[in-house]
Image (cartoon, rainbow, N blue to C red; front, side, top):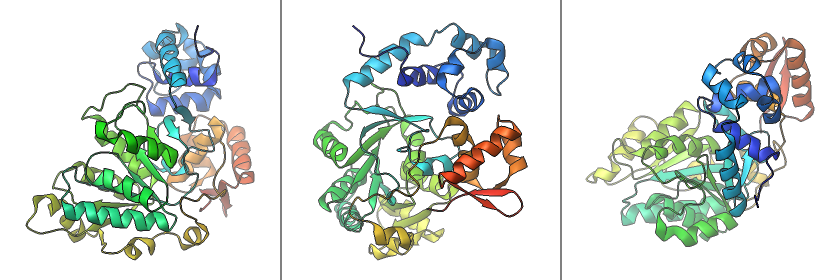
Amino acid sequence: MPLFCQDSEDFLWLGLRSVPGVGNVTFRRLLERFGSPAQVMSASAVELMSVKGVTHQSANAIVNRSWESFALQEAERLARSAARLVTFTSREYPKSLFEIPDPPPFIYVRGNIPVNAVAVAIVGSRRATAYGVQATDRLSAELAQRGVVVVSGMARGVDTAAHKGALKGGGKTIAVLGCGVDRVYPSENRKLFDETAANGCLISEFPMGTMPLAENFPRRNRIISGIARGVLVIEAAENSGSLITAQYALEQGRDVFAVPGNITFASCKGTNRLIKQGAKLVDCVEDILEELPASLLTVATPGGESASGSFALAPREAAIFELLARAPLHIDDIISQSELTAGEVSSMLLHLELKGAVTALPGAHYMVRAA
């Protein structure tokens, strides 16, 4: 007997995302136009192809319901696991992800996302030296003690030390995975997986059962930096994945920090180069804290949350919020860049103002309300 109803919301979200040619951007455009996955799935091929990015093949796949088999299997795998879907319309969805160029329409989550908490990502070498592990352990524990959530990728080395340090500091930690949330990788971190889920969460945009393939990790790095207000790099060789995360952070307008390393170690060349290029040198936790919003830190408790900025979004509200998360816009620009009519944009902006999500500026401009 199926564990999942085929009319459930999660089933339809999973199905739509599995349609060939429907990537993150096209997915959000479809919801923006039709309002819900159910309405997308009941639309005609002609209606679907009127949305930018929808091909004849994708429209036919939706109409012919060729996505149902995968969606049913995935929904049942999800129901059997300890994980759940968090869609971009949910109050739990990290609103900072709307600022990145390609936010996932939903994430798989095991545990509880610390809603609107101040977060700092810590990344670095998988082959960390004793110095790198010690520095990571100390800084992550001290950040956690100050109420900062530590984000990392659960890899060996610096990532593992970051999660362990945050837990030792009595705080919360978020692990962004390059595999499915039902896969324990590396295998020796099984206990750490469970502790992280109990004191924060595991997050992945990849389907259940996805193996930790090399090509997944650069992609997950944009989410690590997207969730955080800043990225701290500890021991990274030149051309390492940690530098990809730092680059994403710069593109997303995040702060980049680096712990200086031994100039004779190849594993420190990347971090030392970051400092030369302008990353802030860190030798104590205060170097990081002084760059974070003081108003949030003063009300934070270890792993704490704030109700401010925690709100659900209808798909059409989310479309406008995403545009404004990147830069303030005039209402005419919002209309031209969305799939909505002028009347719908005006209505959605009013709803967002009432939720405290956006602020009206002089001259019919709007911006995301500061946290």
